[in-house]
Image 1 (cartoon, helix red, strand yellow):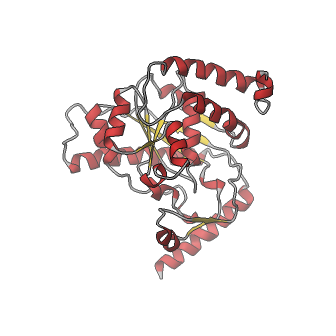
Image 2 (tube, rainbow, N blue to C red):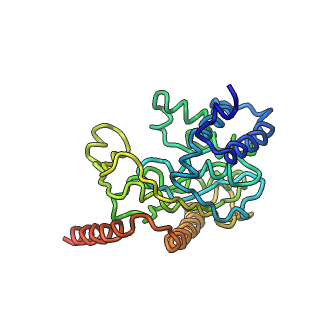
Image 3 (cartoon, rainbow, N blue to C red):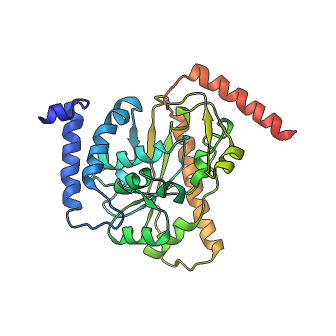
Length: 296
């Protein structure tokens, strides 16, 4: 079977781009041994299948590419949307639109890592259970880690709370201190609009022992344009260590959180139109209703 027959759903430019990217990545990973089953061939296969979503459906744009250097980072950003498509799109961005390309190792919640089939699939395509030992191992091997410090709270927001950043957990910063790994702040704009009308059934989710159960007016994500912003590197202070006080670490994490908030504000100001004639009045109505109920 010819290459064109195998990848008929890709345009020639994207097909050639993926081939070029994975030639570089195979050289980078040729002597790499991964204890979680990371599979570069599966990554390429998945990326080829998802490329039309990235380029044509979500029309992803990446800003701030010049801020990424060829070294390990903890990449920290907002978690948006009702299913973690933002992580997938950010990972694709760093493989396709950053030079040199890299496969981000996304930290995932324990419940996802333990799911049959899906847990193995995410591990083989680069995701890891977000504990300290795993992260330190990857950083020691030159890997960059994608962190959403809002956790499940980031993708468990009802419509009126879209783009409101939940407070960041602090565990990622102790890892950064331990390994003196700089922080690269990012933000994703557009993922919330994939599911514009959402209610979270928290009681049912609790009964089912799952962290979130979003109920949406649409079952499939809408083709909302996605913009990914990459900020300037935030270095790790030389005088701090992984044993620094909670107060010191909280101050640093708060600074990172505020950096991401400012990036969100900038991104929203430049957001591409998407059903604005419907989205804006509906959003205003829901926010008004939410505030009136909160005040009673």
